[in-house]
Image (cartoon, rainbow, N blue to C red):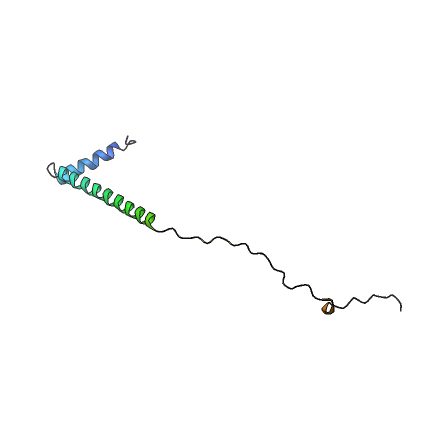
Length: 93
């Protein structure tokens, strides 16, 4: 279960027994358990309140993309405004 670290755990528990004594260890263990339990409870309450506030918010309307049809940059020019006809090239000369 501890993957070979049982001796390290035994040393830590032995030192705690020597430092705090047999009468204080149950009190310390109880206080540590109570602290962990309160921490778990407060984190779950925070998670629940965040989830509830996220669900309570009105959904934001996302604008739908609009197709843009390209328009010609200019209309066909009338014949009078058309560019002059090219002059034929002659080899004479």
